[in-house]
Image (cartoon, rainbow, N blue to C red; front, side, top):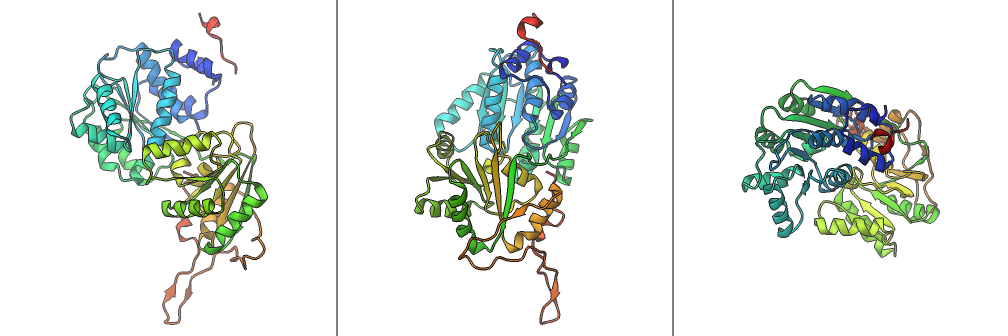
Length: 422
């Protein structure tokens, strides 16, 4: 569907023109008309499908053309992380370029008192849109800094991650402060019971839009190396020797392990940096700037970077640990082979993670090519799931590798020119 087939305002279409967009993604095609119609929406769609534009474009269009209070907060967008909040705010700035009267403020923790004061002033002056992390917004609410009584739009982006991070009660507390006629839009990559329960609590007769998790891009060369945990550093060293160490992201599920990997890389004279939740916001911003600008070659990170960070020229992604599920795997390796670039994704699979990785291969529909252990590292574990057997005392000792993998796969035209429309 063409964006010009949608009932968006001229100023919104002008911004879309500037971006060179013509056709909607599936999630945009299904969600934008429902939001413009005033319906609550529950969207099940992964990051990278265009869901940010799917809610920002119709909301901005309505703010641009509608009769909304000038000195009130008209839209609240909740984000699980500072990084995603920043990205949403950046997207909003682009989409609202031709709407000088529509203002926004990003509200998130991990910064100094000056930032907090700026957030307070923007909200008191009635910024049209607040893009906030739950904890920071609750802080402002507790201090009496924000009035949500006239909010027209409430958006939960990556709601499953917010619940995983323990923000359930914060979300309900914020929702209770909204007027009863507020339009609520909720996006989640998966649909577990806790998301269903939340949807039933805060959504009113929602339109449900569900898109399956897409497979990784074909131009990503996927490889895996089966190894023991104490062999992983040696494998990592060999990978850098074979494939280079420029524009690489190494993902680990543990921030402690991220620190250890980065310490090792730096001791090996590899120009690396680390990204995890223990860093202050100013430190995260600095690391991302250094990596984006090429001053850091290798970024070691937790999944905080897997979603919502757009860097187009990543040459390789290394999964130091097997991701928890298929969706996380797709998000991680999707950082490479973007735009017109090719890319490599290599996953290190220790014995106890074999079951997890087999679940990912089942989702992919094919077996990922296995590369051998480098010489001198010893023997690799077998790539098979070991069944439970009885121990010497007659009881059962579970040896099934990859227990987390069981049941955990979350499957988480040309436009008219401005002149033609005038």
